[in-house]
Image (cartoon, rainbow, N blue to C red):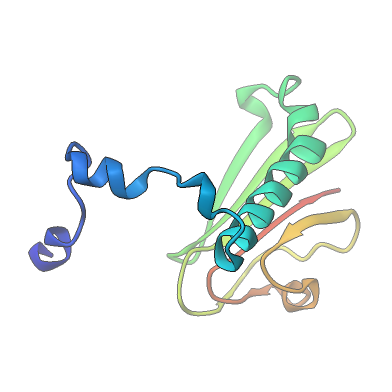
Length: 130
């Protein structure tokens, strides 16, 4: 849609660069501190749960399944189990995600019980290991 595209900043414009530059002196403001803490926690989960197994993965160890038109179920076979990432990239809830009856969910945008019936809420992501 041309109207939507007109609202996207020009990635080559200096004004876009200036608007996106970090202003470290503002990081203690409540909304910025919350975003920094959230990003730090995500990077920590990645460092603890994903990075230790990445070196041992091969391309043939991965699988991707579409769930409806807006969902993805990603799987990586590990030497000692599986790494899972499920995402509902829609503003509507979506049915059809695999249930996780064993293992550990190490990151989820929503409480784990919402996934027990295979239904993911809108804009949901879950990372787990089995």
